[in-house]
Length: 299
Ligand SMILES: Nc1ncnc2c1ncn2[C@@H]1O[C@H](COP(=O)(O)OP(=O)(O)OP(=O)(O)O)[C@@H](O)[C@H]1O
Ligand SMILES: [Mg+2]
Image (cartoon, rainbow, N blue to C red; front, top):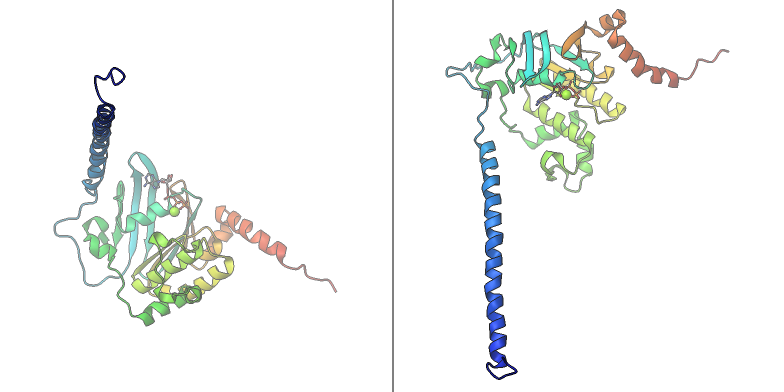
């Protein structure tokens, strides 16, 4: 049409420009419709998570004592996560101030036992008593007493020294003012564990739970932390979960779990005398050690 002079070249250019101005919004419209439908679906999922109520319900007149001793008793406790049974008929009695060691292969149910004390889950059968009162009758905040520690700098440094964290903290450019990432990003596994121990010491609870708390430190550091913890554990009911015999050998009672059942129990000496699973583990863990001992020279 330009060639035949029906329209000018400018009209063609203008027409082309208008065409693009029309196409872009139409494309955008399709894209926006797409994004909106994605957002609606995602929003539903987010709100379904936010609206989930806790299955753990506190009683109206929940138990909230002023004194806390720290006796823990498991009476014929069985426990399932949804359908999967995890613990079977567990009986444990830890009087206030005593230490119990819990051993067993990975997946045996050690952490599950511990989760029942703070009532993070409810038992399926039997009951868990803290200071003689069923945990289901306790006020959750009193039971967990999860209020953050309010400590002076001196107390913080003291706790860090006990936990063997002071030296590496001082090596950091900002020392005790270092900001660490969420869940300890930027620290090594062993450093995280030592910080966690220091926090537990600061919190000064009656019941101290140490679930695999020195698994990521070397034997030497573990030994030093244990020595320090001996002092902290005095007068506290302590649960130690560990894979190393050296962590639990001083406990008042050691229980050995297998597939959610207690298969052996007793003190370190009693369990060694039984020559059962604990003894096998002991041999395994100390075999290497003995091999490294220099053979006695015959003169
Ligand atoms: N939140 C959960 N939901 C469903 N099943 C779970 C849950 N937590 C643990 N389990 C299952 O319960 C069993 C016991 O797990 P638990 O964490 O108590 O083992 P563990 O003895 O602490 O092991 P580890 O030494 O590895 O820490 C395992 O079979 C595990 O798969
Ligand atoms: Mg565990």
